[in-house]
Length: 456
Ligand SMILES: Cc1cc2nc3c(=O)[nH]c(=O)nc-3n(C[C@H](O)[C@H](O)[C@H](O)COP(=O)(O)OP(=O)(O)OC[C@H]3O[C@@H](n4cnc5c(N)ncnc54)[C@H](O)[C@@H]3O)c2cc1C
Image (cartoon, rainbow, N blue to C red; front, side, top):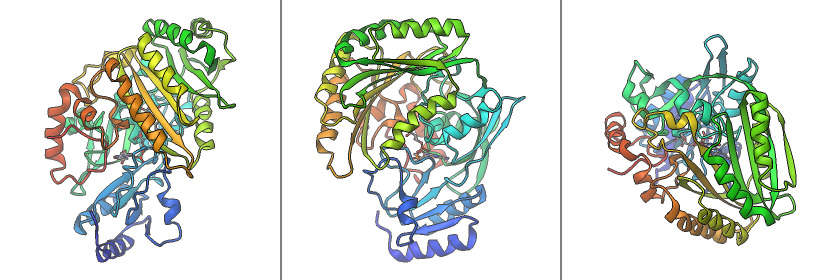
C-alpha cells in the first residue's frame, strides 16, 4: 500500500506531540540505523518509526496509525528473517527502548518489557540462579520468540518459551491496553501462545523461571568424512534422549570453509548423569573438537551470538520443516544438500522438540504441534554484494527434497510470506479457533504484518 506523504507528515506531527519517545521518519539522519534488522536482504522502507518508551507511547502509535490510514508493524528484536517488523510505507512500533527485565526470585517470575532481548532475560534470571525457556540466540526479541512458540535447549524440561508465559499486557487494534492471562481474556491468552504478533502489541510479559541445575554446555564438532555415521548415531541417540538434554545440531561450514557436523548440547540436571549423556554425544565418531563443560545459559547464548555478530549485515533466507525423526534417507538428503551448497553460509540446523514440550495438550495453547519432532531450519546466507539467487534456490530445493519425510505444517515463526501451504497446516486442529479469534480481536487486520495464520 502506498501512503501519500501528507498522511506521513500529519502522523509524524501528531506522534511528536504525543509521544515521550522519538519519531524517526524517512530522510532523518538516524533512519538507516533505526531501520536496521538482522536480515540485510530486507528492503522494506517504512514511512516512520515510533520509538516507544512506554506502553502509553504504544497506545498513541496504534491510534495514530489508524487515524492516518497507515499500515502498522511491530519491531521487537528485529530477527524475523522475512522482515515483518518493517511494513513498507507504514508506521513501525519500535520497542527497542522498552527492555526492562525485573525478576522476582521468590515467585520465580520475570516481568519482561515488550522489546527485551532473550539474552537480557537470561542475564537477569541467571543472577538469581534461575533460567528461562529461551532459544539459542541471545539477540532475538523475547516477545517475538515467545509469541510464535520458542524452541530451545530447555524445552525437554521446561517446554517452549510460550508454555512459560504466565500473562501479558497487550495494546489492541483500537488502542486499548488489556492484561491477558488464565483468568483474564483467556481466549486471547491462548492465542498469544503460538499465534505470534497477530493480536496486538505486547508491552509486557510475565514469564515463569526455573532453577538452574548443574549446567553443561559447549560444542562437539565432527569432520565431514564422518557425517553419515554421526547423523545415524545421533538419530538413535535422540530417540531416547533424556529430557534434561537439549541438543541443537548444525550441518554447517567450519572456520576453514569445509562442512562439519556441529553438536551443541545443553544439559540442565544432575552433573554426573549429564557427563554420561555428553559422553554419548562424543562417541558418535572421532570429534575434531569436543569442548563441553560447566556453563551458564548466558554462556550458551554468547557462543551463538558471536557467530551472529560476525555475519552482521549478511543477507538471509530461511525455510523450515518438521521431521518426526531423522531417518537415514532424510540425513542423506541433508548431507547431499550441504555438499552442493552455493556458499559456506548455507546451513541446516535443528532443534529437538521432546520431553515437557510434548506433554502439553495440543489444544492447550495455539501452538498446535505437540508430537516429538525435529524443527529443521534451512538457512541460506550470502554476502551483501551477491544477489542470493543460487542460495534462495538451494533453500527452496532442500525444502522440497525434505517434503516426503516431513510432517504437515512448520514452525510459524520461520514461515515466509509464500509458504501458504505450510501456514495452512501449521496450527493443526487449532486453526479454526485462531481464525475466529483474529476476526473478533483484530477485525480490520491492523496487525497483518505478523507470522502467517491459516487463511479464512
Ligand atoms: C539468528 C536467529 C536465531 C533464532 N533462534 C531461534 C531459536 O533458537 N528458537 C526459536 O524458536 N526461534 C528462533 N529464531 C526465530 C525467532 O524466534 C523469530 O524470528 C522471532 O519472531 C523473532 O522475534 P524478534 O522480536 O527478534 O523479531 P522482530 O523482527 O522484531 O519481530 C517479528 C514479529 O514478531 C512480532 N512481535 C515481536 N515483538 C512483539 C511484541 N512485543 N508484541 C507483538 N508482536 C511482536 C511482530 O509480529 C513482529 O513483526 C531465530 C531467528 C534468528 C534470526
